[in-house]
Length: 571
Image (tube, rainbow, N blue to C red; front, side):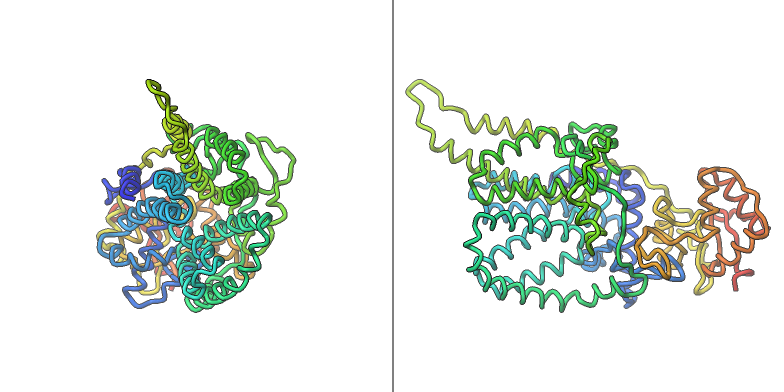
């Protein structure tokens, strides 16, 4: 377990060595977003406010924090660290402990309940914590890195089914499930699907065992559900029916390319960034990339261990979840095959319609880890039963050969340190508190352009300003509109926001007419805007010229930013 932690620290060494301005480069906008989540949660607790919602983004409507990846399960207990040392320290702790903790948790379960051979359990745990998809998400998505609860959910269900203290284990199951909900609901759903496939595969040949399990399962699950609902019924109600809630989040087709199964991830030792980019959404969503040597080994292990019911069930679960992750229509090396994927018949079911289907391949990770652990033990058993060599001859080096196979298979997908670069410093306008002279109580700061999925740096300015003001729009998940409960990333942009984004991309000052000026005035009043702020950046001259034309007054350069005080027209 100490080795797991050292490996995790090595992968994040660039972040730990620069906690002041270090930024995981491949996270794009997500580090700013998640640091905002934990800071807002800590700030809410400090001031005795409801942490389930926040008005600091998307003014005047706010954000449903429970419906976003706020990870209250860690954001709340780590709030003192966030308040004392800053959100980047919390970010580093969560990611580092997430990888190491996930590996340690699977090792613990494997070593005590699956195999007797600690080396096999350690190898399985290592893979579960540091598999290529885990490292990919380790750039940006802590909710897909902190998975140390899932092994114990698996264990508790198995113990209840065996009749081992169903009431007590039912309580534990309810507590653990509630904790996982406030760590990450999507990983829980993906894990549950994988576990369901495992159970169905197991009982397909061991159905006579099921009747004896019905009574303890009924007791344990009923107790677990009761405990679970007591703890999270209200937060879940807030998520699905509270302010700024939404019913589903459609991503569009997002299945894995079949070629992604055998290629190497960007952050793998044998990785090729260009080849990985061809068959993935981005570097934070490389959800397969197990590499062809491991795929080949899994085929061999599946055939070898097929007679063992647990190994067979694990293999079936691994294959089914990998196939489901191909999405509604299968692609191979960027080519449409025209073959519908099985996910087509599940994609529109409630809750499942919000899943990013390529992530379903992550359910294969614990199955692969378990198969590796079982295989190590079987090889060790065979090695122990080999006849002693004749005098003067050497014993057959089975263990050494197996070690070579494992090295050849896993070394190419071994992770490399994550890329860290220096984040730009926030302007003195925010860090020195100058913004306070421009913002009245209830007023907002409007960044130019506004915060969005591709423009998250203003979230960092807001943190450096002590969360003292609100901003319109933002980077979060919320409803598409007041009469449209479908989820979307960010707010439905208003006309002025669209205009700023157009100028940011083109670098040209558009002709501005009275209609656009009237729209800008309506938008500023809707946002309760007190001041517009523009930092020196690409195309800043075009953006500044556009704002000057809209407001019919020039901006003033104050403490590193251009500002337009609009309080006179937005009473």
